[in-house]
Structure formats: C-alpha cells, structure tokens
Length: 76
Image (cartoon, rainbow, N blue to C red; front, side):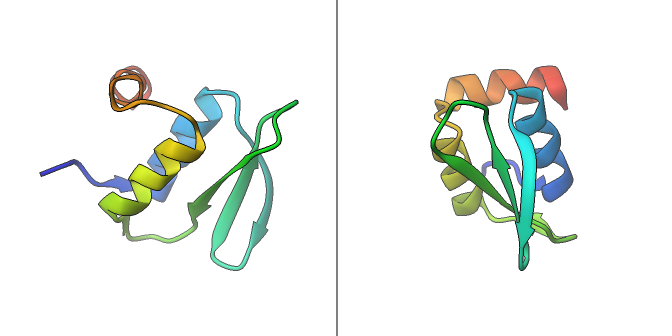
C-alpha cells in the first residue's frame, strides 16, 4: 500500500522544489512557481492526505513516481 503523507510533509516537499506559498482558499493552500502558469493545491488539514490526492499533487508538480520518491527520501 502506498505511503500516506501529511499536509505539512507535502508542503515541505513542494517548497524544496521551488514552489512558494501564494494564498489559502478555504481548506487548501495554493503554491506557485515563478514563471510557470500552473499551481499546486495542497489540503490544509491535520489529517493524512489520501493516496489519490497525493497522485494529483504529483501530477500538478509534474513529477514522475520515481522523481517524487527520490525527493521524498532526500527531504523527508
């Protein structure tokens, strides 16, 4: 079964890849990367983030599973 991540861990991972906190809208934190038109939306909750949501965050960050796992090992 895939590992679950907290919002705090995903935030740390996004910031390590150059994503910067832009704003919070409701229960989601929005991160942007300079000179890119897309954004990453991370839930701002105390609970673990669901596996499907983590997959969507990976897609928004344009990371493959291998890249994501390598970054997780380095950062977390």
